[in-house]
Length: 289
Length: 303
Image (tube, rainbow over all chains, first blue to last red; front, side, top):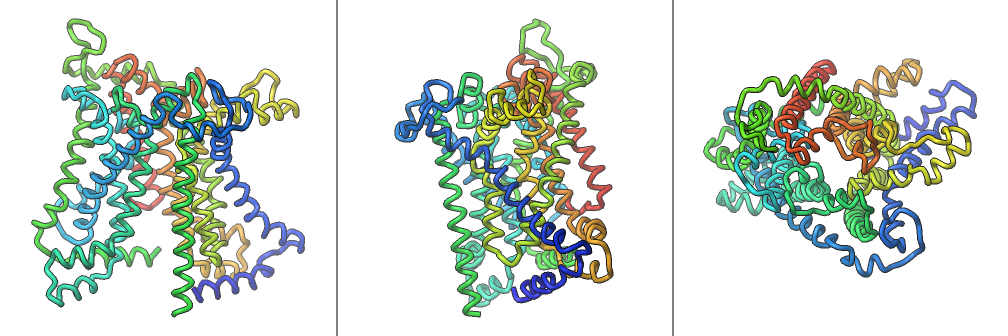
């Protein structure tokens, strides 16, 4: 922290030296980047604001032109046909795929960092490839496999597909956490005659937990928003994104905006409050230190 | 860079040579899963791509064969869509890089004295992820439609011909692809720039280098790993995307990409061999581009 602050002060002192133009240009230059950043962030939020505002639209069938403010869409979310069941399916698929992918991925991440074994590079490649493959290929491939095996597509095939593409992301996320773990802590546990299981559940697992939670949240987000792979492997089952895709041709009901806005608000509140509490913790630690 | 390489090196060395039986138990379920639901599907795509129509001639019925001809047919029939996919994806990647670099630079370097602000700005960058990808794209469709204030404004200023449209054009599709994949570009750029040691930049300016020279010879090379992963994370999904280009979203009749053709062949026309051969073509071209690109940018350790 102090090094960074020192550098910040040093660079602040240095800036006038760097600018060669007249004073005016210097002040313009130093404002350009913050202003650009603010505008860029606003730009990124435009469609979110649009979706949120139109969740209050008093629309009849299609939710395209503004017809007046109403809270009805929020109060009777499930009025629009199928939107709530599609949302429920998405939650169910998201949770199931997340639990399976996080378990399998965490096990792989621990093995990759902590053990030496043969075929290491082949396994790394197998973990990397799903992330480098376009979703449409993953989706079509699984659909071709299910077709060849005569499996009927539905919720189960969607869960299988989502688990598959989440595993690699879990491995990447948890692996970073495992590598940063101080092995001395586990050694201390073993020195105090902790059994391997005790050492794992009392020391390793709690230390890995933030990484595992991050991986699980990422998995859930990936699964919840996936459309392309789902579309190939869903058969007649509907998820929230698939519902939106099908409804797109005849007009999205405002209730879909309500669900998307609500999910957005919950996610943003969770993330922001986590950031603020982390910042407060940092401050406390600094004071103590 | 040298520091992070050193860090991963020690992490490797920590790994004690313990019983590989435990490693096998930890690896086996996940690896089996990926073999079964990632590798086998790729193999079945290859098999499907070589199938020939069944002797009975029913729609959607195929028999195992060795029809190399399917690939030739796909390339000649859908050459336009294949080319379009890659040119749209390249354009979207370039625009996303130009858009994201200053943004990531401000968050990762300039905002360092304020960690909370840094994190809150990052939350805003990933905020689009929290709202459905499809709804975001549909929001742009409305905002860019002929009745929207933006388009009528452009027409009033004579910046757009009175009978012109924005939605349904390649411009709208590339715009949508760029918008949707910006966070994938910004996050790795931020990760690289956040670790950038600003003392190197000071050294450059102390030696009387022009700010632009410092940027070109110090900042860019030091942030190269971030640029490479951002480009890959944007280019790969953009090349395979079919939502932005589809007619219900930002595309029109003349904008369909390879993903649209794979979807319609697989799910509508039930022409599985065509869809499978197109998928294999897409995958092979992407892997070739990625390999060459990663080699040339000198960041092979990413793989």
